[in-house]
Image (cartoon, rainbow, N blue to C red; front, side, top):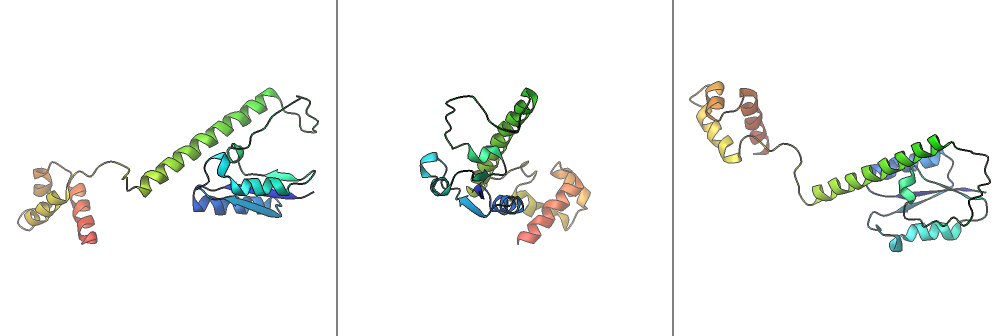
Length: 168
């Protein structure tokens, strides 16, 4: 009997974290599915892992959502197990499972948007053109006067000017 780990990649940091957890749990081999293999048909590492499983082997994952692509058919509902769960425990696990899936979808969507150049957060108060104009006006006026002209706070103005100088 051996313990085999399975990781479905989404972010590099997450792969490293999952690997550490699975190694600590005693996995002798770990299969890592690249994030390009999204649908079930292209889960190459999952197929290889399933091919190597022998009787009484244990598949270890860090979260249930990692194995959502596995199709399971329960023919009879007779569970022979020393672990008996109450309905409350099963519902708790199910809610954690759904939460994990939603978190993973969100993280994947955010990463995809960032890769496409999407900017997150509040839009800047001043445009690049306004910042250049503010720098020019600041030579003959106080910071507060320039900030009032652009209808922003003094600290906002100075932050925009500092960012502009860093990028130049």
